[in-house]
Length: 335
Length: 265
Image 1: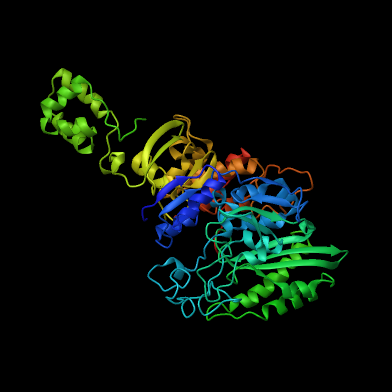
Image 2: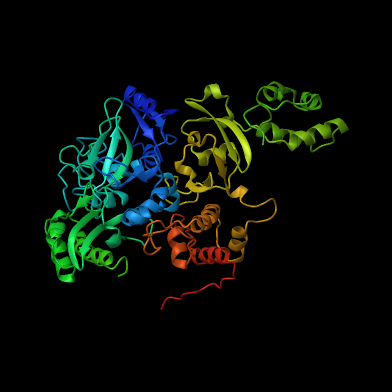
């Protein structure tokens, strides 16, 4: 690991100022991804600003503003605490489930909610500094495009990058229309709708998100909704636990008797960002919650997929996973 | 435990011992303490006959923690040194570390606590699992510097004196290991799993995680499926999983658990 200076920030303004003063500095929160990448020489900060002790870990009901009645989750709270907080398990069990589907108990105890959103891709070409990768070293090309791309994207990729985004938590947040609150050294706090937080690779895959340099995620806001009774996070992977998703599906339904009044579906493991299945959602609203409508919605969504040489299986897997997750959500988690 | 990069003060008897037996090393010993090379040399020299005062002094030196060689450089030579104060297995420790030192390397290389193992060093195997402020974490992905003021428990601190922790006893009873390399991490993780289940923390297989309005989490009974999911961050290349699961089930339930064997075909 390259040498770096370690500093511990005492409060948010000091952390932001320090980060602004050094463009090669990075914030250190849980460190589960950053330290790994530093050991691999992929990330090379010359200063780490430890923000893990800042008081940004509260989980509480939002009292006022556009998301009043919803729940705010501190950016520096631990994943374990977010997954198990009664407010989250009562109102957003989809988020609990998605967090618990990711990583291991040890990693969830370390990882923070803000840091989870800022995970880099697990594409092996990104991790291997001897390989070309436009995300790690812009202009060097994409090793995966014509290489081994079984784990890679089937939606929204570009010639520059076919990597997928690894977080499970973020897939649930996409389905729940979360809002990311961020703060920079200058100016007021910004609110970024979740769909705009992560980006597609286009010609600048080195940029994972629309977070500006030096901005800190202070909180995630979950607007009030009625999905708690009918939601499900389905994760399909190569082994039963402790593996990244081949495909994952987050579903939230609001029902009037058996008629779908609102539907939210987001997919993980298929794109450079959590992939909202807008097409499937539109097709489901107003329909009876039955197999035939689930299958039609899933097929319409997956019809747009553009698989690579080794990941064609993800199209059929995605279609079936959407149908299964819809059934699970309808039956309150029972298949 | 003594902070090992501080040269321990030698008594007059000890000084005289080194003056008599190893005069060529005396300056170095006074400056940086007794290191492994001095220790071995003294051991060789005292293998022969000694005067009574020498024997007493030699015994003192031989039972004292050694000043470890290169990693115990004076702090001024460390680039990006961080002063650190934390509790490890109930004992306060003060030391100065390179900012890049992980908690795992600090435990193993600086404090001689080699129970926590370096398996993959990338957070993928769980062999380095320790408890920080009561929660299981991966010490290979934790910077020592970030542990300031925290309380660390390693496998060396799990037993109460000579009395093994019930989880250690259960691992022995059920043969929860073969080569033993992953075992310290497995046991630290398993001890934490019991606590997490007691607090009602859910896992991905806990069924509906939804709580009714106003409800609080209640303790989780650890089925085999629950244990396998909750322990999935601890890999065992010998494949002792069925025995590890049996050990954990036995400790949580308090009742003897029979091992189940499944033969293929």
